[in-house]
Image 1: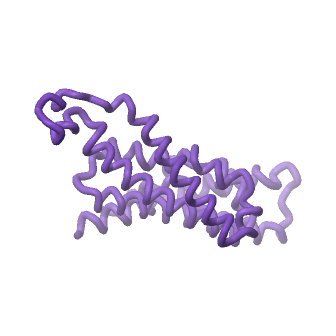
Image 2 (image 1 turned 60 degrees about the horizontal axis):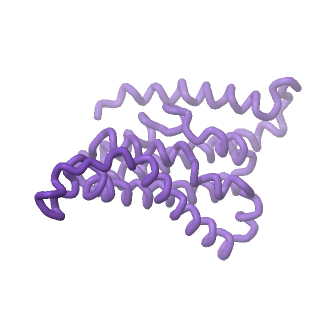
Length: 205
């Protein structure tokens, strides 16, 4: 239980997808103009992150890893399908993004219209792909650890975009030099937030 808690906290603060690895920056910059829109995208990214990483863990453990097919019989013990990891991960991501897109369009048309192209682009969201690749690299022992890491990573990305959206809404009333308005000041704030989040590296996990 302690290990699960450590994975969750670390994935939010220490290994934050935005401030530690700068993953998912395209949608992070484009959609963080409004807290309401950022909230909707954050929920969607977290849902896709948890579902895809969990399913990809199962596929890695029982299909893709070297010797993973031993459960099918001794003649499959030497089969190594790890070279298919990228293709399988992307296919899983695209499938769940399609499900999420249909759900958002049905239950929240306003959010669907405000997200625009960035909703289907979650299929190639580098934060979600990074979550699956980190899961594979760190070789979590069970699906509970993998799902906790995915949930924490989604919450971390959600926290980052909500924080940026709230700041950018306040910046509308600030006297920012013209050359820095828009993306310029957003990148500066992101860099400062990244340095601030580095303080969490001192947390003993």
